Length: 187
Image (cartoon, rainbow, N blue to C red; front, side):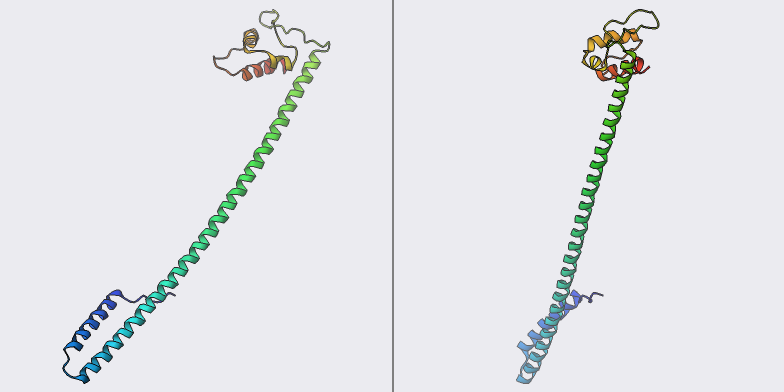
């Protein structure tokens, strides 16, 4: 439990008493009264000095407690920062793992597409796919997945209507290519 801090009003009152006693000393007519007044004044000064020292000791104790609390807070902040670093590392590891899984899945899908292309294309060239609605051949239809990915947007835009696929302007080329794969090759 902390020591009780002396009341500043009491200290001011003691200083007023000290001042009054000093004035009395100046006005005392005989030596005996002067000696008693000086002794009283000395006791008052000694009491004030002890009070001030006690206050200083209390202030020092409080400062030490504040310093200790600050060190504890700094240690806690350091621990929190270390925890955030660990969480960030774990998030990075999870992201890496998800990307590896995604690439594995994508590679697996591409392998499946290529296998279907090979199955449909036993002679080495994929025969033209016929539009079910009008029975006509689709010009420029890609024979393989790499051919599809090498085609420019104008050629792909020419193939899409024959497949019955319509996209709004600004649709990314990758989405258009994927729709061809999903509509016909994966069928």
